[in-house]
Image 1 (cartoon, rainbow, N blue to C red):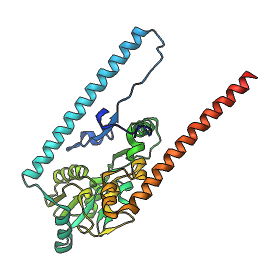
Image 2 (image 1 turned 180 degrees about the horizontal axis):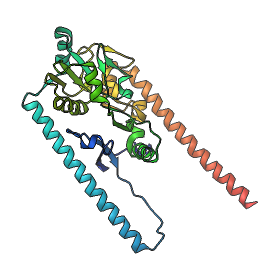
Image 3 (image 1 turned 90 degrees about the vertical axis):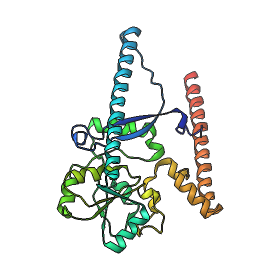
Length: 295
């Protein structure tokens, strides 16, 4: 684990940031994208004196802490509203198995609000896909900066992409479904679908159902699936998926036996061998450069 510089759960801090400023941030039921960031130390070379540099660093830390505190408060307020929707019966909670029965027996529609990276791996048969967040493919400096930060702060390990609010989500739902339609909303873990439930309820949809725990909580027999992977695997990615170190893969490995585990053990060994080869190659290159300079 240390050799691969994996994120340590003991050194992780939570940072919540708006997925897209100025649009979704002002909507009812604002959902913020919460990421786990490994602690790191950034070293800068002061240009105008140590005292001025330290003052700027302190100000940056203070501004960052104030911003993160505000985001955490906003997230707590959103969660309170969502809990109220469930408690007051405005949105009915279903287990994945209950959702499967409802789809089969009462012809209710499952509305899949996940981004394309998750939906393309696995989806519920007969479901309608309208993402509330979508992968941000813009190439402006701000988006590129967020993508680099997300990757460096754990995206390489989890495979979670940078996403932004789909401003056409509500209009697309309204184009396809009348206000009295029975809609079962689902995402991968259950948070984004709750945000979508609040958005739709405030827009006049009153027959809303929410898949508690998301598709991560679904067993293979609960919902008719289509796609190349199990529903539980749709939300994993990155190096953790390649090495088989996600919770979902560990559970599957325990069921499948040693054959399944050997595949990922072989991948881990290959990673260590490749890292060792790169290290040795870097050493040899360094010696070669030194020899050239000495001559």
